[in-house]
Image (cartoon, rainbow, N blue to C red):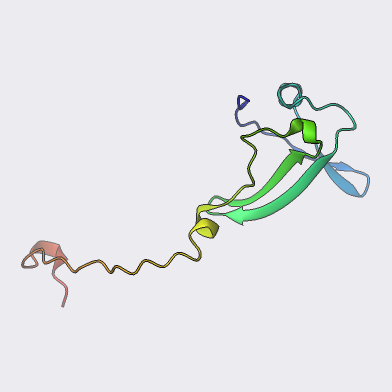
Length: 99
């Protein structure tokens, strides 16, 4: 399914809750209608906090649907046994001299 691209939306007040309008083009591309159930998840990654909406109905699932995983969480348990070797670049010159 093609991605419709990034769009901006404004957070509005709706009673005691908040609401965001979803553009028609996004609803059309995801086959969403008024009353569609959406799951809401939130988190933080290297770009900052995010909110993710995903249709709940099975008819919206496809092979390309996968849970969001940030690069930090993906490599959190990774332990590389090899250690990088120190490289000798020669004598310090100019403003790089460290004492």
